[in-house]
Image (cartoon, rainbow, N blue to C red; front, side, top):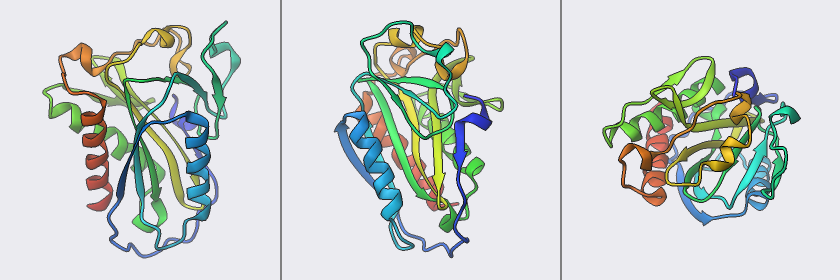
Length: 223
């Protein structure tokens, strides 16, 4: 996803003092996409100044999601996999079992974080998680996400409303990558994708999702 498309921002609340609250990590297991998306929006709409930030660790059944800038030329020609249009920025991506997802429901204004700063934290958390397993990864300034030797291993996208973000980051762990070949991932034709199991990392989605969430929490709490 191009940076301008990966993030969709609405007006922000006036900045509030940082309350120093700890982020709450919740494990949702294998969760259908549509109700999870609706729950993120409800949480964001209902939260107030003292509401703790939450990080939701989960996997989805097979689903393509398309951001508000999504163009049909990047879609699969024919597929039995459902396609969900959502309010994050960016183009089309794929989620499925074996992918560790962390949705970051964070009050950016309260923590004094910019959108770019939150994107950097999500990318850095993936980079640090992979480094703990002796895999070197990096970011690309023109295309948000995390890459290993130029091949994408994690995608991200955010929506910001009233100074609070939702959506988050998806790390490919041990999944069927074939559905990526039917699309232009994140709007890039021919973009190669990989996963941790192909890089010699034996840890599964539960372990890597939990580790990723803990690293995101530390980054936002120690900002």
